Image (cartoon, rainbow, N blue to C red):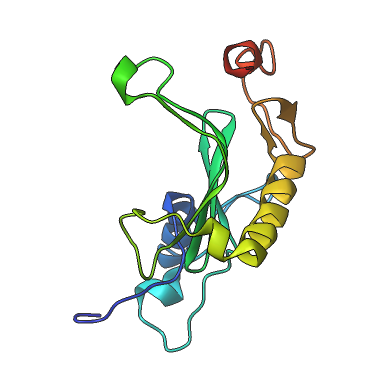
Length: 160
């Protein structure tokens, strides 16, 4: 509704189940659908909450960061577009970086050293994602492949 703000976590993966519900349809039940219905969030229902505990940021198969609630943790590793980047834009993150998105939406101040317990909690979510989806150097148990051919041709490109 007008003049309302929703701070709950949602993403484009939520569009399929949400639009299906709003249109009176259903999502397929013969496969895993990663999104959640966010109709209550869109309609501003009091007390509506996201079904997501966390959101994982991947670039291709590399897990770059995880967000949960107000916290976002960037993981160590390279940051560059594999095909579309300028050399001067590439960077390396050497240690986990933590940001409080409620206080620092621009992610300017790394506060990992001040909140080791938050970093540890978020790293548990990271390990869950790596076990399920995978990361640049491993295939997760829940990884789904739809194209024929090698399952992880990018592993050599990402390896250090």
